Length: 411
Image (cartoon, rainbow, N blue to C red; front, side, top):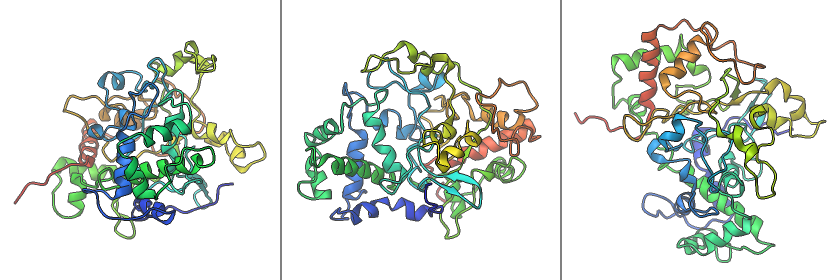
């Protein structure tokens, strides 16, 4: 069973670069506004390390739209992004890469009776290996055949070794650390993932620069509608039950997620291209998604079911089927232009914040499509909230204050 770690403070988690330093990183001098390891992670994050070479981490996690999917047409449809091999698609909408580093190492909280932490929608990037789920996650997409499709860890390393930032890599990690040999590749690949995790933990990614942050600091005022929305968010709407809006015990800015997992009863998205991946072959000649349209996204429960049958995790799999990680609401409305469409929930079924809030409010009292996974649906905190149309609008107005990049008016 995963050891219980406890939910780390935002400040501690945002200091993932200190973990890298403890593993041998030299120097903390700034490179522009970033430390050397953060700058290295940024180079890797935006580099097109894929086969063929046209996809980077930023292809699915663009800062202009809140570090998630930047293609309007995709967001309006299946919401799942194509990989380096253009006919291949994954199965879920890209989550935000911002505010991912504070997620604690995946564990079972005995007091709450819940699994907490990890990254990816199903929690499978546990953080057990590298000490932070975001770093564990960073090593996944490079080798995923439906994402960046690199043939091996050595190929990723060779790309970095031939890059303009190769010298920076050895400045950060030490001479000889960009080692692509059979004996050195595992440690090198971990350094690559830790570097990306350090960038994702940097103030450039986790800015805490929203209107709400300025409001908490006494440097901005919420409008009457936004203030009403906050009151409803914390009260009648019960949003803060999973998306806490209050600063932490040490004054840490709120992250708007409790890092837990939940089955909201979201319907399947019929436009998800993953359903057609039974007609697209992988490199091994087998269908990428053999189940085709019969595939069901089991979320956390599916991940837990991959453990040995005698394990604690496997025993907990049935009661967690259909649960997906509670995402941060920071940057939930950040977009590239006022008309840019975004998609919400793990499969992108909802296309507006208003529609999403209305579903939370009326799931059990209006005619919605059935949940993709009918088991373990949260019936306590959503479904029949009794919000009026105006109250829904107020909650949406408040959530729009969570986008980074706000500039307070000069007095």
